[in-house]
Length: 235
Image (cartoon, rainbow, N blue to C red):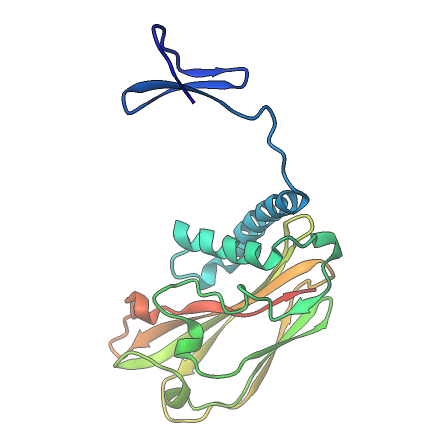
């Protein structure tokens, strides 16, 4: 680093950068070419893939997201995909289930769906066009944490797939279950979810709750707006 004198410049000439810092004009050299390691190049590529995949999947999942335009949430979701990818090459990734960083991702930092619905939910890939969600029998008031005066719970379920090797939306499935908030048992349900889940696809299943109160209004407090990934698979 050198101090400029007599003539003061700002900008860049060849590999010399001229700038002002704290009232002093400074000149410093920068490398003519920055070398990246192979791992750094793969990580950088995967970050771009994750950003695109996150944007595509959020578009398909929007109905289940309490704050779909929240920039922090958007960055966290893409970051979770990037953390899972790490420095792995998409073209050689084997099929995987229970993807770390993605499988229990919460779209609302104030609460998670697994905090509110204490029930094991299982998603199984049947073939390239079908997933199945298994919901065991349960009693709502025993396994669902709800605000006072809850009457019904609208449970939105969305599964979405994205071709990760060339990020594009491939399809989605969505449905809403109405759950009376009572002590009456709900029978087990095997829910078929038709969507493309072929090789090379990242597939996420998301559940969100909307609590409907006895006065007919929706609960609007963030602590009671859970939405999260219950299953993430790479096919």
